[in-house]
Amino acid sequence: MNGETIAKAPRVLYEDADLLVLDKPAGLLMHGDRHHQGEPTLLAWALEYLSGFVSDFTPAFVHRLDKDTSGVAVLAKSKRALRSLNRQLKLKKIRKEYRALVVGETRLRGSIRLHLQKQMDRARWLALMVPVRRGGIYAQTDYERLALCEHGGVKLSYVQAQPRTGRTHQLRAHFAAVGCPIVGDDLYGNPDLNRRLHHELGVTRMLLHAFALEFAHPETERTVRVEAPLPDDFQHVLRQLTPADPHRRVL
Figure 1: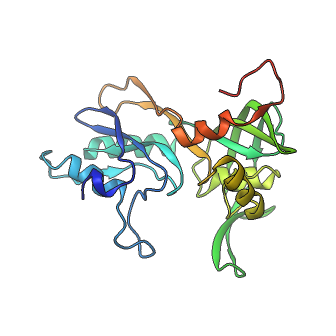
Figure 2: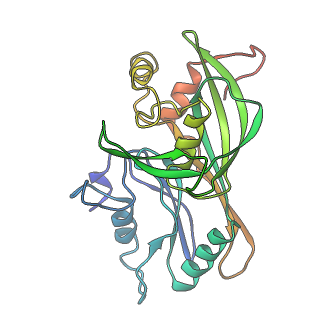
């Protein structure tokens, strides 16, 4: 596999003997699975990129991003790095920052603390993470609204989100649970509104971006912060929105 098989190739954000940090394009799987056999993956791209790297350890990603989510993805190139980052994840020492455009008007800042449980939506035959009062697994998402916008009578909030836990579909499920689903997310959001925004604004995917990751380096223990710029398609949508505050730009 090479970069020509991918609509937009990943970009190297940071690399040393222990780590490879990539900017994952939206639409690219991180790993292959039985539902997407034969599709290009970020892992395959990374292993080809590292084809001259000699080690008895097969490099592995420390975390996952959904196919439609763009942004920072960290690959461990050594057992030491994998152990260290997995431990930091378990102890909630890794700081993750996402950018998202969500439907509705969020608070200026808030914390969503809802237990989530995997349930089957039999109408669509899809698995969803849904809020539950009892059972499930604890999940916490802190957020800050960066801008309040409007388009065609629909309010939209541009937010920075920090998941304090790392549950499957956490941000998608949490924002949907408080009535502010992520724009372009048909699984947890409003497909009719998403189709409208596709035609009017050019929204082609879920507008969720892994903007930054901050962690202790496995070898030096110094703080490493890596950021991935907001992708062009995301910026294109934001520039078309009308700010609720005319004196404040969205970007």
